[in-house]
Amino acid sequence: MNGVCHRDISLENILVDESTKALVIDLGMCIRIPYNSRSGIPEEVVDVSMGTLRKLIYPQGQCGKPNYISPEILANIEPFDGFAVDIWAAAIVLFIMLVGLPPFELASHDDPRFRLISRGGLHQLIEQWQRPISPDAIDLLQNMLNENPRDRLSLFQVMDHPWCRAV
Image (tube, rainbow, N blue to C red; front, side, top):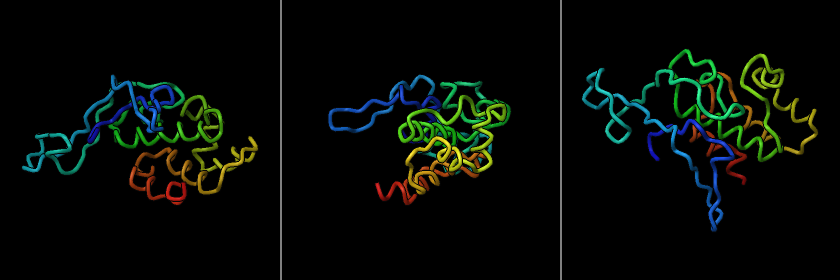
């Protein structure tokens, strides 16, 4: 769906059909991403089909499964980028698919594995766990799991990443 933030992407919410196409299910927490209208009236907010620049979304409370919640949703203090939240969760899905378990329990500095990853140390965690993950895959995951949502890869950057182009 165009212009929608899922907010609950997880392995449990992904099905594979008979032609091995992945389907995201459970749209109960989805919200539309607001955009400025083309009219230029600041108060006028529209959806992606009628808008220009997307807006941040006011905190909506914590939602999603604990392992998949992004740091900004966990904090629930500042407006968030709906696309960045879903990129974070997609990175957790990919990590679990490649490694076999989640990278951390919660995206909190109380979790030592989260602290390591938030400082750019994903490759160290992978080495400690002795998982055969390619450097390109590690780079992709590290950049999708950037604690600062402004620095997190966009969907287009993910799709253009060398690891995704090689797969």
